[in-house]
Image 1 (cartoon, helix red, strand yellow):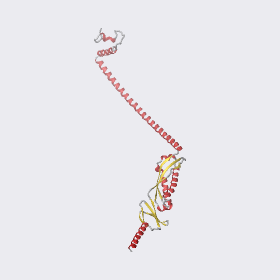
Image 2: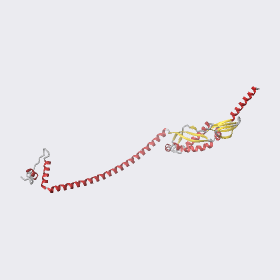
Image 3: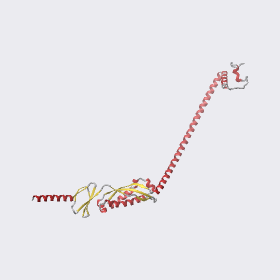
Image 4: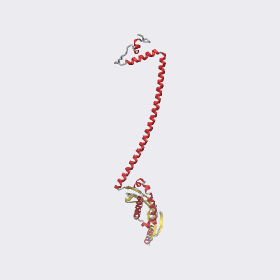
Length: 294
C-alpha cells in the first residue's frame, strides 16, 4: 500500500511537472510570439512575460525583435548616364508584426533575408539609375540612402511585417574603364578651379601693386615738395646771412672768400695755375693789408 501510494504521488508530480512544462512558457523581452492551434494563429503579438497554452493542441512560435543585419553581396548598377558602379551595402531590419512575419516567412529568418534581398537590390538600382556619376560621388551616402530606406520600409511592413531601419553603403567602386574617365574629369575640374583661383589671385595682386605704386608716387611727390620747400627756405636763409655778413664788412668778406679760393686752388700736390701776377686773384698775396698794396 505504501509503495503504491508513493508511486501514485510520484506519478502525480510527474504529471503536474509535464503539464506545467507544456502549459507555461516565457517570452523573452527581446522577443514577440504568436500562439498556434494546429498551425492556425489564434493569438497574435504576444508580449514578454509568463503565458499559458493548452498542451499538445497549441504551440508557440517566438521571433527575435532586435535589429538584424542583412549583408548583401556587391551589386553592379548603372547610373543616369549609363556608367557602371559597384555598390557594397547592408540592411538593418526588424520584425514589427509577428503575425504577418510568420505568415510570409513561416518564421524563418533565412527566408526573410531571401525576400528582402531582391527588393533592396531593386530599390538601389532605381536610386542609382536616377543619378549621374558626379552626383553619386558628391552626395553624402547617408542622404543617398534616405529615399530607398523610406520606400522599402513602407513596402516591407505591408508585405513581410518587417521594418527597414537603415540601408548603408559600405563602399562604391568604379570599373577600371569608368575610373579612368572619372579621375580625368576630376583632374580637369580641379585644374580649372586652380586656374580660376590663380587668376583671381593675380588680379588681386595687380590691384594691390597698383595701389602701392600710387601711394608711393603720392608719398614721393609730397616728400619732394617738402624737400624743395625746405631747400628754398635754407637757400633764402643762407643768402640772407651772407648778405648781412657782406654788408657789415665788405673788405673782410672779400678777404675771406679769397682765402677759401686759395685753399681750394692749391689743395693738391700737382696743382698749377698760369695767371697774370697782376690779376685781382693775387691781390691778397701781394699785400695782407686791406686794399692789396704792393
